[in-house]
Length: 124
Image (cartoon, rainbow, N blue to C red; front, side):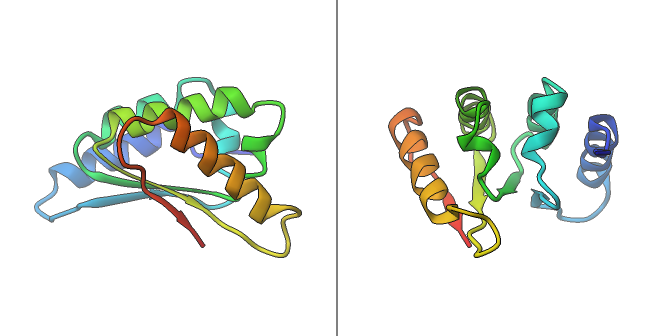
């Protein structure tokens, strides 16, 4: 799989923040972006730093979060809640992803018990 290099993503975020437009929201989705962090440690951290005080939405189907990398990925998502003031975590639920409702419930329970502020999770 090919992922957009984190340097490209942070470049676009920084460029959007400096343009004379009121960018207020960044979204990371398409394919399975959480898979990028498994293979490129620090991917989320670099993006979080670039986002700064803007809103960020991160979308996943949740399958990778409940696999063998679950603890690591939950930890990374918790860091995003802690470092991005306006962070929205989105979990897609579909009939094409086996156990997607159960996966979403498990993820929300893990986040709810580990994030010490109100959490934004959108299940769609």
